[in-house]
Image (tube, rainbow over all chains, first blue to last red):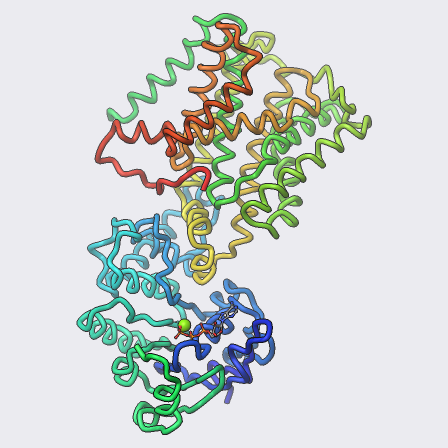
Length: 255
Length: 325
Ligand SMILES: Nc1ncnc2c1ncn2[C@@H]1O[C@H](COP(=O)(O)OP(=O)(O)OP(=O)(O)O)[C@@H](O)[C@H]1O
Ligand SMILES: [Mg+2]
């Protein structure tokens, strides 16, 4: 059986620094998979290599057996892997609805000739319905006409996810989705992610909020200094000596 | 439908205005119509965030192409004008291959270099471009009649009507592109190309698309000009003209569709009515430079920001951006 999303001996070097070092793990379809590790462990770099933002120095990423590493970011997205960014990356000057509309780019591909002659009504209403559905899902519908840059931090994180959700991805990569959210918002968001998973979307999530990660994930991979450290279900990871060692011994603060 | 009233007023003004103007002022009106197209198409190009310095040269590509098509292949004039636009778009498509490997400042300089290379080719090759002297005796538009009105293209008034109709259709197309999902994607590419890519947008393709469309309309504008003035040369499309286009866009503001048009019309009136009457013609570049600096200092969001203040509560659909960020 081909593996769904397979990270195979992924290595990412920046000059002399090896940010990700021979990392291998597999994400099963329809699961929430956590990727944890102390600050600077290489989690974001791993995301960047999976999503096509970086070309890996060596190793490969495969989706349903097809190599997707080395493709451009929009090509990876078109194969169904959509990411969010660690720092709220939004179209700050556009409205919330317009942000979500950009997210519908793949399911409703704009056509310039149809647009000029006005033959794309159908697509436009479809795209808007999808965008509004995404906002609804993340409880942002009432903010549709606000400027994205004016939203609270928590709402901005949610909008980042709504943009990704609007694209109908098979796999969604979330980089620290809970930062800037209060406990209540985090709890609601966790519920939404479970719902997403139950609808068949696979989620790969990087997060420092251990309580959220442990409560949410089906499986967790822990990395440290770019290397694979441990993998298993939340209970296994919680009590894994090398994981505890990495977080405590790393002398670095765990948020 | 009170919304159409201002449009009818504008239409009536455009029809009657030339009749109260002198011959030379009518000529200026023709240039103004063409310049409105140039500056509006330029704005489309800037939507994706890249500012080109080749726009006026691309306009010249349309002018040369249309002139040569009529001269060498006897293509009838209105068809050649359309083809001039198509050829300018194709040249832009080819240029975009090296140009969109660059971004920001490098793109700006790269586009300038590309434009200068094209101008050099015009100067260098007497066949077919006519060298530094350019092309003379370009075919005029053939006269025709539409029943209620006879177009006599020796009269600037006729050419103004003709150009105004062509430009109006072009503006309508540009407007529809901007208000479409394609236009939204242009904005997305400008504001966050990373996030746009994550949503599956081929950023480079969209930059190329904006550049190509804008160039096509600029080429059409150039062709309109060529068949009016009858003579073009490499200096008709030099960087000084480009500076005028930039000044119109920046003084008017590029956040709205009408901003650059406002800048173009206002500065043309200022230039022709005030400066020419007062005999300051020679100082035009100097005064334009001064206006540019003053408007960046004191009116950084352009003339359009004044208009927006006049109609409070109406939020623009398009984000307010800074011209020279
Ligand atoms: N573009 C880059 N150039 C050079 N070094 C980089 C680059 N990106 C990341 N690094 C380095 O790679 C290492 C891993 O960084 P990365 O951002 O992947 O960590 P992280 O696990 O996401 O950390 P955090 O939890 O703080 O977000 C760090 O030492 C970082 O400085
Ligand atoms: Mg990170």
